[in-house]
Length: 330
Image 1 (cartoon, rainbow, N blue to C red):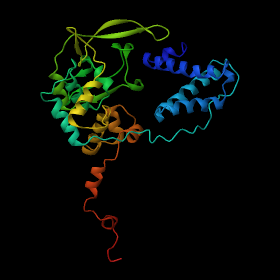
Image 2 (cartoon, rainbow, N blue to C red):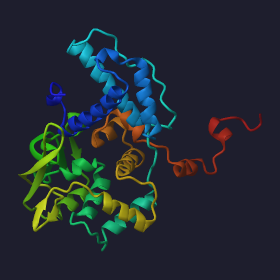
Image 3 (cartoon, rainbow, N blue to C red):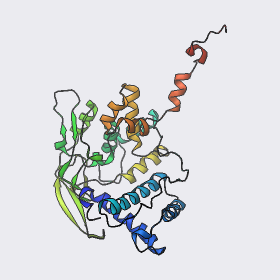
Image 4 (cartoon, rainbow, N blue to C red):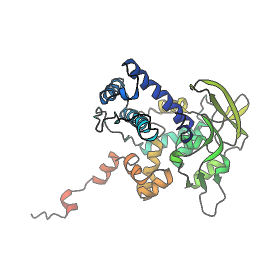
């Protein structure tokens, strides 16, 4: 863990640390003392235990990936043992459906959400939740990207209409898990903003804000907090001062409950934004991926669900034989 720590984010490091400790606990229960004692059957057994807990297919695959990295490092990189990896080459995962979420919000749902958050809706949160959700819909960004966005990231007086948002590594940006923020996969990008997004940003007050970083010991136990200056665009008010907003989960649930919308997650707003870019503006998967921060393949697989209502609209009154060019006489 210490050797690989420099190339991991603090959050990833802590998740890996807790996960490996959990896996090792089971190995110890099965009297596995040495690395070479672990056999392929033990991996299958461990997978079965976690599968019985009802974990998602993606979580189970992450578990196997972690174990594969661990044993590959011990065998190939550190060379502390001379053995074959106990990870089976072909693992049969339980049938839990697709890894891809295909929920696409309807225009009616998005309109209802926008009407609510732009109106006189009130929430107990001291964070500008309505503005955050409006920004997520307009930009298609990830929630973490919005919550860590700072005024210096934006160019609101550009030489092109709309404005620019530079999403990049920021070594001095305070996050909950450490100092320094990076976009997913450490892949920077520049997002062209719609005029409405620029108007939204210009309506926000520029205030001095801070970000608190949690300090943990070697066993991930919280031992303190450190505060650093920042210039977040969506800070919350806490005890008379503005600080980083870390979550809007409770407010989001309240919005869905009030509007009677079911099974809609915040990340589904990204899927809807992708839908608008591709179906309304004619963006290719590669172009939409560049805006959202995805590869062309990921965009096609994860962010392009088929909308049943649109299919019905396209097929309404259409005869297959006419479209195919079959002769009715035949």
